[in-house]
Amino acid sequence: MIRIGKSYLGTKYVANTLDESPEEKLVIQPQKVDCLTFVEYVLAQALSSDITKNLQNIRYRDGIINGYPSRLHYTSDWIENGVRHGYLEDITAENSSCINKLSLSFMSTHPELYKQLANSPENVKRIAECEKALTGKTVHILPKNKLPNTGLPWIENGDIIAITTSLPGLDIAHVGIAYYIDDNLHLLHASSSLGKVVISKEPLKHMLDNYESWTGIRVVRMSHPKK
Image 1 (cartoon, one colour):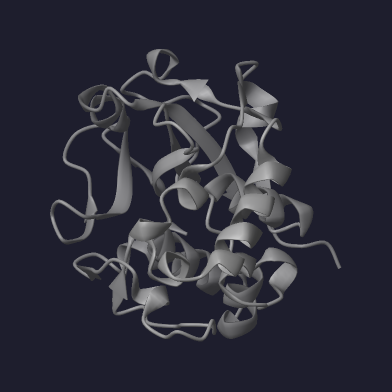
Image 2 (cartoon, helix red, strand yellow):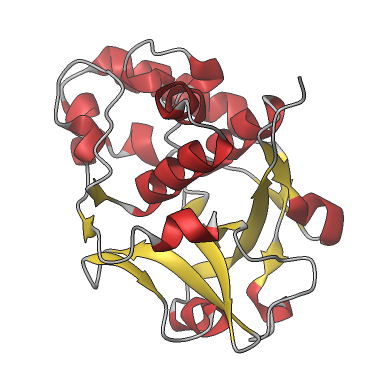
């Protein structure tokens, strides 16, 4: 994960690359990424040489493309899908007793922000159904006040870091890859403010403290599906 992730350093940050076509299809454009597509491309390459198949399984619920709502828009759904299919492990669940109850509604209540929702009541309805299915589920998080600059022994280089948020209706604000520098935990990520893939200059702890709405992290790790 680290070796492949670092090969993306300097890659241009571009939002909404998956929404350019009105028809939902598998988009592979690793030359321009946002925070989640960056992690998806790295994970797809790290799992095996069948990157196209891996990417479809990572990005779509049960690997099936069936319109815009079949894409795993909420990161909690994305993680759950990965754990269910055996290529992700939820490391936070094993190491933190702090629990968050999901309450998802952002996309269906802000359809004007999404090209494929703005003029599609049917898509909004299907997204709302996905949100309802996830709402009420509990997930383990590590609150930011429990994360030191040095990280924790159970957070390893290459782990996927999902930053939780207090913004109403949302679960995750940002994602990246854990990367230790001089015994401090940093983030390898696609930065919208810097416009490219970078390694954070400051430790992840400082990044979390800079955003009041960022509440903590979830940590998941790539694992190879059992044959």
